[in-house]
Length: 377
Ligand SMILES: *Cc1c(COP(=O)(O)O)cnc(C)c1O
Image (cartoon, rainbow, N blue to C red; front, side):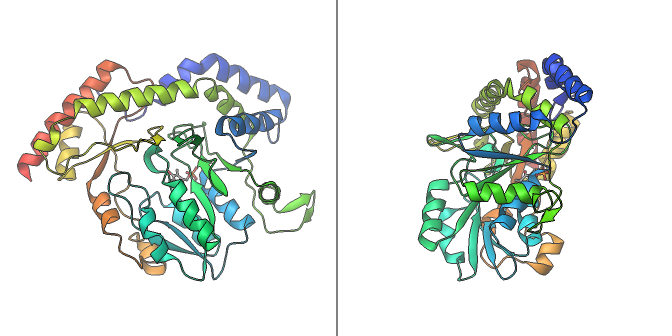
């Protein structure tokens, strides 16, 4: 039996009645952009995250670009971010016209190392964009303290951490603004492209709302440069259904993650670089990925695939080492831990409807593959 990496179909089947009837209602309403579901979703997500404003937008990429645009960050400005993330993080900084300045990560959490941020601040720095990778919030309190001292904005990339808890707050509720993604494979996914922005700042909310509509404060009157960045009504309807059991899903993911970690105890004795995810005591992860490290990833993945268990690498290269970035915005600070991570991380199947039997197949395959790859190394 082969195991899926993510099983979105069983999740749909569990919510089929609700999703089908909500989509049907939109189809029959005739309002496909800006229907009542948009405002309902924004209210639901703002409450769930504990922030004043939520804006539903076209993608996670829009959700990161728009706060930069609204804050007036652009040419000549620098934005500090992690070296280790999906490329959209750095891409949005460049699209805004600014320069990304890459800082190394913490080896245990894979999130930006706050101790290394201050060395990267220059008179041109305008913002810090931490990423809450794999489902766990970055060290937002430390980052906010640095930002306050140097008068910088903080935009949290919460594409992988919607619903995660940081201290007594939610990821997305701690910074100037936060952008998340509803790409289908994210913890909270829709059935197309989608994203949302969170902020407690009224002015910033209004500016981003205008940017979402081509920079217009009223119809056909454009006071700023904008985008077409609306989230369509059907996606909002789907997300409203998904929210009906999202907290349960997060619990399931957490239960599965703990079961993986228990089962993998002792594997370091076979492979010195084997590690399971480290979630800080102040955090509750939503497990966008369950990511381990191994010494010889190629051999590990080869054996896993022979055993019919899929794996994925998030991400095989640091952002500044990607060809375009290497040429245009290369790393200017030490990013050796990010490079180490890019060579050794590997993610395992993780989805809320995974049953015990399926997880046992993965666990067994991981044990065999660690043993196999460590011996050959
Ligand atoms: C997925 C992702 C994005 C981009 O989201 P899209 O909806 O695909 O545009 C940005 N940052 C991170 C960390 C992501 O994982």
